[in-house]
Image (cartoon, rainbow, N blue to C red):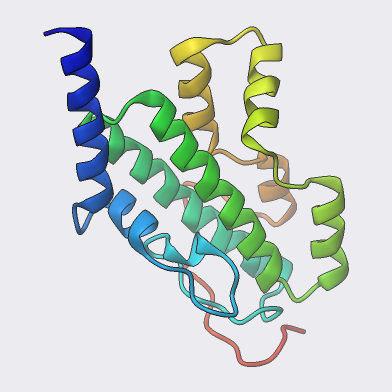
Length: 180
């Protein structure tokens, strides 16, 4: 198979991955954001739409960890479909950025959420690739590392909330008013 043919097949597989209903990737990328929420993270399968400012920090972390599982699942589905590693990395990276923004929006502790925006802002694609290049990665290894890291978060934060990502509690109940 020629390089041109392989590229055409890869493009076709990527397009199919974006369109096949029932896959995490299709559900994530084809779902339009809900007006007023401002985040495509709610398009991640299994992540409910919570009202802004209604979850305590621990509950927001639980939502975040549930969504991380779905990002990992989307990456695995893309791998199985033969989606090129750079495309998988970009999708995972964008899903994680959207999830971070969404989680901060649903946090009731606005001071902490705004502080996170200042201390841990979402990176650009150029920043994340630069970070991994500084670690000595390049080419497919760089993109694979980005794709994998999109569903990995800081375990010290999980310990702070006494959460084990392997044994998560159920998603929190919906609230109409801010958490206490």
